[in-house]
Image (cartoon, rainbow, N blue to C red):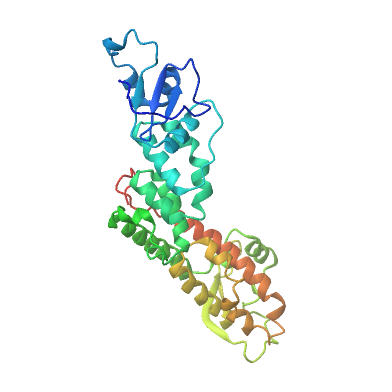
Amino acid sequence: MASQSTATSSPRAPFDDDDADIVFRSCDNVDFRLYRVIIAKASRVMHDMLTLPSDPSAADDASPPVVPLTETARTLEHVFRLCCPVEHPTITTLEDVHAVLEAARKYEMPAVTANLRCVITRILSTEPLRVYAIAYMLEMEDVAREAARLLLDEPSFHVPAAPPPEFEVLPARAIYAVHAYRQECAEAALRLFDNHDWLLNGDHERARLAAKTGYPWDSWCWLSGSMSSGHAPQCTMSSIQLRWSRARLTTAPKSYRTQQWWVTHLESLKSALASRPSGRTVRAHLGDPSKSEALSQTLSCNQCKPKAYTDLALFDSLLAAMVDAAVEKVNIDLPFSDVRV
């Protein structure tokens, strides 16, 4: 470790203690006066650096040794604030996040990365693509996975209006990994539409009510049954039937036909999930005026209209939870991951 003769700026508070025993100098010549014991604990790399034999020629020098670093003063201040007993920095840009994470990886400072998690989480919801790119390049598996999950809501994630700077160095394999992951999630979500018998036999309030009363057609307003007369002529039946197992009874399972407007709702959901395979897509569906065709078909039917919105909202809520559970089982294939798919 050797001092540099280049003119330097005054040390920045709070890293300006006179009794500091080590000085780190940024690439833009700003000094940070710190304590060996703290830095050695925070950084595995610097721990090894600080335990190297001292320069004999500097033995009589009363000034603490100076260690030149390649990072800017802005980055080093963030890094040191995140690992020293001082107030943490306010970091608001991904450029700063990237620079700090890069330094934390370089100097093996896990506490810095851990203390930066809250910042990453805050930015993640608004910049999932850039966070994914940074996490991929720095091999932060958990952050990359979380960002990829948010990208399920972005079918055109790979062609943003303005390409982020990370695209200059991000490998094509990183983008392909998200494409493949989104496709697998879409397939998992769409498989839920292969069978809807859970509406009458699942572990939820309406199925339990059907088992209790013995009147499954009253569970959902789109089911046929002995009380299904009085529908408008436009309210037609579909070919899809729901099977009621009646497991606790001795009679054979029965099937009940469903209204065509409910099938219209299913098809609309499937189309939406094919491009945005997440529970969030299902939860937001009824609130989208462009997706209201199914509800419009119930307006002329005195039987369906009073309960259609309530029943569809409950159905969507149950389905959204199932979509989330199905997608949760899908893992994005990351080359630096211990989880192989």
